[in-house]
Length: 78
Image 1 (tube, one colour):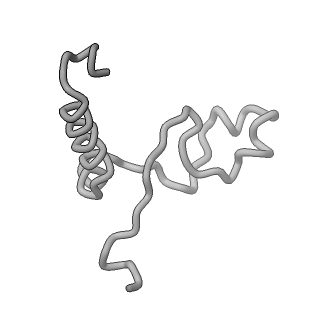
Image 2: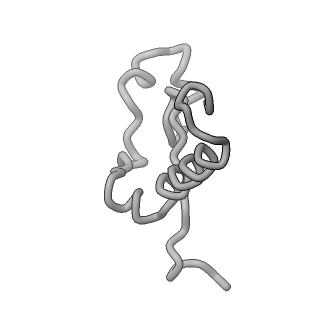
């Protein structure tokens, strides 16, 4: 990565750390993310007899996307 972007390892680490901090910030999710209702099963699953029995109650993405769930501070037990 350092050679590709022509920057020192320290700079690459600093930028990568800042990017991870931005992407894992709860404010990012509340502003940019909208989760689908949990009571709706996608038609791709409902109409496929190979998938439906196994994935009918699954929550989350099937395309490799990871969304970091979090509990708001006011809902957490200390």
